[in-house]
Length: 505
Length: 115
Image (cartoon, rainbow over all chains, first blue to last red; front, side, top):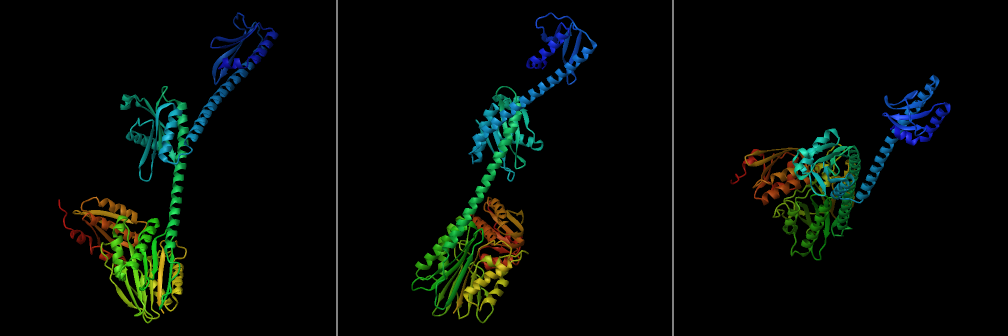
């Protein structure tokens, strides 16, 4: 250390030496470990010095200043002060060296991180990212191989990617992860005492990685190429671990937001499919006042209604609800509607019972395949006799409110389409006089809930229908929507709310 | 939703408690899925403690019942209370499922599976 100080500050030492020579000394020299570091004049045989002063650093002697051929008690004080200054210089030199070493370390780490960042920038697949990280870690760490492990805290499933190929088996890696989980500190494992020694593996540096504040990942560096893992290797591994943690977290967030965007796009699409398939207007049917409405929930369900007026055949309408939500429900609803339309238009004598039976026969396998079903109500109006023929496959609520009586709930006799291989629904008949009202709604009405988690329910629905029954079909539809909106104010709409209202004119 | 299950002979009995709706249906579905591995699957779902079922819950039960029947087994229901019974009646799923007053009766009604 002192030699470095002397070399770096040679000019200053020479100035001090010259002062001593001018004062009458024969020589001035600097010593460390009984070895002369420098003397003025340069090549002179030195006797025992007349004055000497010790150079100290942190309480230890690191050298001496010698003055030859001159002795003076006052000058000894000066020599001591000079030795003190040299001590201080030596201490500062040491600090600078330390700082330089740290700077170089940091520089190396920055370069490594830069390299790692560049290499992993465009990876949007977790396995790709982990593989690339393992590859770069092997390069940067100067090891034979590396691996990255990531564990899903929810279900405990894990993924391990190795470079260049698996050197350590998964079970051992999981064992290491459980060892570092509590301490959060890296561990250096000597593999020379394990079975891995047989395949030439000597050491493993296992570093935990924090992902979302938990240790759910780790990296392993296997077999340092030029010996053992030392302190700079550990530091580098920590830097890589920190960077990898943030990349993994970043990718997880990206994947999560991608998933949400996909869901949103799907929900929007489902809603468009659903709304576009509903009739744009109500048909004019002699003797009937007719209105319909549908309010899709944010997560669209599979509600539908349809009006079909085939030439020379009675007006037929349908209301249905496909189980489930989102795109699958919207697609199944589209399919059900198409099949139903075809049966109404093409069957020779399509009574509601027959339509439901044929629909069930055609849709049963598909519904079974995707584990869904659809409730359906089909009504058919025969104006000459003022008769409403209907069949109901598990659909509710259907409310009939005769002009001169109380509303009644028309219960289904068949199960929903797709539940059983055969349709159990049979044709039923209602006389439909002037003022009689039929409300065919979906369960989004009776299952609408308020902030106390009470359901709107059937009785309330029937009371509102009775109350509105002297109004037009359009006003009844509007009034029912108002009633459930007021009831479930502030609550998110959890299911589609669809209804068709028919009134005798 | 609370889900408990036990075996009565070879019949798996699942006791559900609470609201059986779109939120809890996946949990029930997972549970039922595991029971479909036994051949033939013979399952009784006891709905005594269930206070509410929605259409997703019904779809879950229908799906499992159909799977059981495909595999020559069945899924039966027991102990339906109002208003759950009313939902089954209104949707006429009472015609699709075999429904029993209690779980033991439902389980005993299964023919013992051949060894």
